[in-house]
Length: 456
Ligand SMILES: Cc1cc2nc3c(=O)[nH]c(=O)nc-3n(C[C@H](O)[C@H](O)[C@H](O)COP(=O)(O)OP(=O)(O)OC[C@H]3O[C@@H](n4cnc5c(N)ncnc54)[C@H](O)[C@@H]3O)c2cc1C
Image (cartoon, rainbow, N blue to C red; front, top):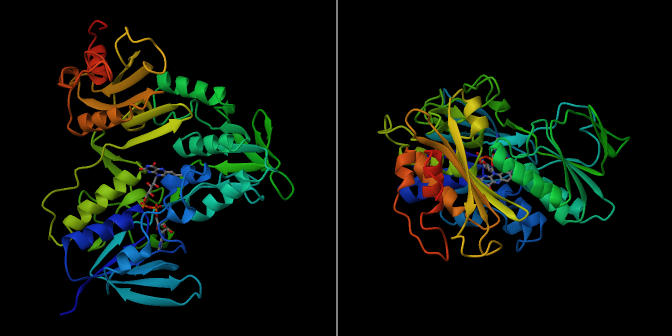
């Protein structure tokens, strides 16, 4: 009997998770994964560690090596770009990148995880030498080479989201003079509320990063190589630009075939199906359903696409899936020099963008009882919470400290995904031991503070 054919487009987090789940859930499938790039499954999430010399080898910074799956019968075809879906006869047209030759491959089910490509700013000078982007294997190598190059002294990073912050920190640790520019008013302003971004901005400045917010970047200047970055009010001498300011979905090839939104993101339904029968779309090339916002939003995270892939595969052969995809919270974490934060769900900025009315609170304390001297063993800890002003449902939150309390961010993720209220979090039964925390645990105290209770 002929095997059921499943084709996957894209060998990153989404492609990896789809293959894993297909092999775990079903026997006897004919699985083929097409990847346009040469190197299979570089993990950009590990790029900062590579840039800071913290990995065994750059070729280890990947989700999987092809052999892990070819030995289980999966066909992994790198340097193969899928250029078209022929929905009527259920085939895809695929171009071999090295030769330009094209072939058609039949599918019974097709999973698209074609992701995004970082944007060049729409300004003059992006074609100058040493104007870089930050994603994927090739850029990782180029950036590393320049960070190791003593002739490169001044690095300007465009974009103060978490990717830009990673670029700024890695460049600073490589001994460069670093300027961080963004059009928004606070670094990490899309992830954290002002009380926390104030602390982070100070940390960046204390570590020698020149932080310039509300910067209107107008041009990269130079004759062949970039020599300066011009904003509306200043000019910054620059040997290397790293742009981390937005992305575009890899969906041009789907235009007119699969329904896309105005920005080119693939439209999928609550079962993650596209408008084409048996064609599913997941990951960064789509918008994600946010549990706290109860709507689709851009949440471009590896954690999101992995959950989507798992869901799609689990329900792949049901006529109509028994349950819709439940959605995601959107959780991320990052170290910024000596500080570590984890954030989950909504904050003031993302709630506003989603058109939601939320209330927020900010709580500051010490990690352990006050009889433990303040300092490294009893550092300051900070918690922000976002909640529905009427129902007190927790919609988001973040934790920040020089001590690694990021695991508490996962507790917040659970609270958001389970739609807990402030009242419930205020007396959830967490442990107490003065070696670790206060008589009430940090998140209990943060919720009590949000409810207006007296300071413990
Ligand atoms: C520097 C950096 C750090 C990050 N850190 C984190 C982190 O710590 N935690 C986290 O959760 N997320 C992190 N992310 C985000 C995470 O990497 C993405 O959310 C995730 O990679 C999305 O996976 P994806 O499968 O949707 O697409 P992508 O990773 O974008 O991969 C898409 C793949 O499809 C291929 N492709 C595209 N079109 C075609 C085609 N037509 N034919 C064949 N192949 C095609 C591309 O070559 C690519 O390999 C980071 C991202 C960056 C850039």
